[in-house]
Image (tube, rainbow, N blue to C red; front, side, top):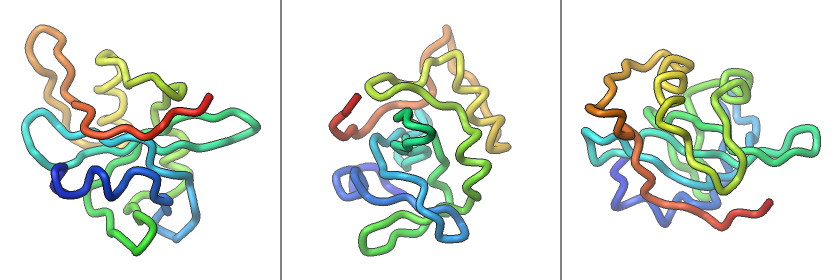
Length: 125
């Protein structure tokens, strides 16, 4: 998914797992440093009364009229690295995120972030 074309269009859309179960809404988008394509979305989820952002991969995702359908299942997504609303994924946790989804990870030099934020929604705490 090309970041420039889709950023504004994706923020706020419902996110569905591979079975069509709603997970939450797209809160922010991230692209990998080496490519212009979107790599991950932070999905706003409410679970047990707590709002959190869970990172999901966008590779192979399909766009519906008002939703994004992922290739992964709900259980895998819910167990992914997460952060509080208004916080980005720390560089130290990037490798964990890639490993969680079994995606090859190559760290950048000097501890620089591999994932770059390309779009963010409004954060509600």
